[in-house]
Image 1 (cartoon, rainbow, N blue to C red):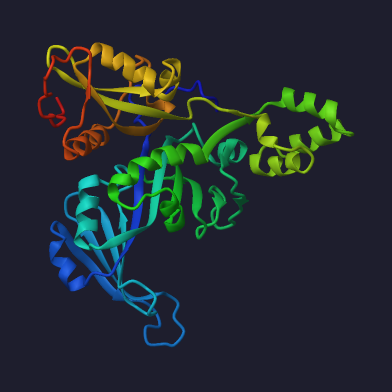
Image 2: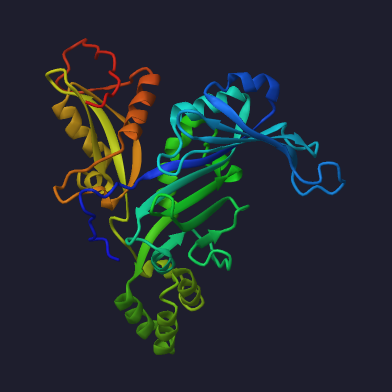
Length: 378
């Protein structure tokens, strides 16, 4: 697979989305349950050995709820078996196609207030045939995490450990015919990056891009360095070539003889693209939402350059957020399609903040911009 691949026009776009969210709360379940409007109880069961002295699970019972409109499932673990545990543990599992919905997630977390985040998962789905487990082993680097083998899931790739600060799972999702890259951020990582409430989730887009990367080895530079600085360059190149199908294992070999082996990695463009979204009002009073890729931002000289152009051409403008999308959202007509629901969530969050704005050159003296308008599907 190469980054030049573009799907047909009827191929669904892929983008980053929030998947499973787990939070812990000290609220009373009997008081919180009536607030969960739109959810029905599917099951309420006791876990194994509830009366034994040696517990296999930290909680004694689990109640499963399901949304009547979106299909989101909620697993509420209660009856803790240890004094140090919170009274309730809530795991929200959205549908695979849409991911978590902001309003629904906000309503769920609010029902169990006060609460704190324990796990947040972000997922990027790629069309089958463009990314698979072989491609991931050959090109993906996840911070400093090591690759783990799992005999139970031969087509999956794990980097890191489930109980570590961050954990990457890559596997085919047959239900939606996609290959999924799923990053699990645990409590310590969330606290380190100050992700403590729902409004902080927008920071995870930058965190995701900094931790997950697609790379190729610059073999010409590596060979040139080996010939100049190593006693047996041919042997080292041979050992690296034998492990080129596993980037993590190959980096182990390089690091044993070369300091800072990451310098020989070239980022693969267009695997996951960051889009910066702005809302603005033109001279005629028309409001629009535009996006700029990270490459376009760099061409303009950074965020300041982008905002300089917007200030010159608008009455007012404001950055409303960032979305991560795969490069294959571009069709042959060179149009970019985003999920309307996700862009609308950015606009709704901007409206909830009171419609902040930055003055443009076409704003009249003393002018106050009109109240922001909700995004509609027309």
